[in-house]
Length: 230
Image (cartoon, rainbow, N blue to C red; front, side):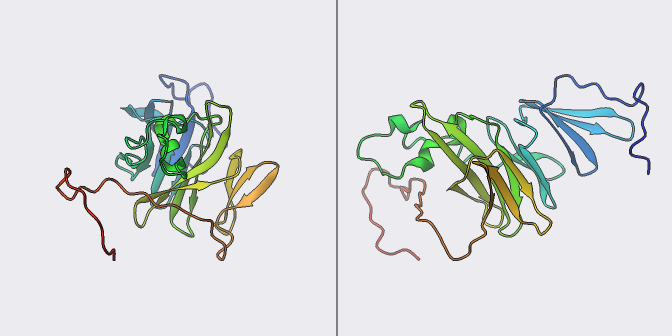
């Protein structure tokens, strides 16, 4: 205590079962990850307290700690740890049964703005490890990624999870080489030899598309029309 730079390297260590991809301090514990496991370590005695199988973290920047929880991602999904357990918050966007697995198999005549379906989390070819950042201004978590398609084209974007409404949005982003948070809770992405401040402009908005799940209203065999929407 109060001597954080002093340690006995011959005694003060903890052996992990696998090589970690991410190490994060959260809620009084040290969490170490590999691609498919999460380890909780007690730093008072350097004891491996528990192992959580099936949930991992991709890289050192693929997690972020906030005052409302720890957020991280692996190749299977995105997670919100509340101090007791990790919840998978990405079930709505991990795959699309509507237009298939990749942009190449979207049927002819489908919506032209189909990137919402093409970048489902399970089907992203992660060209670089995802970066996770928290924007307290809009209470949202950004899971930034780079998707390399089979034809060689590259899409840079972020799945944004709004904490107040618990909704997902897909936005265009610069190349997510790195992320950082400023001293005024401003969030930045570095890429393309520049720094980009996220949500810096309140007055300009790009065009957007909105997709819902299929509504059959209990009568899947009958065609229906919405006359008005509130």
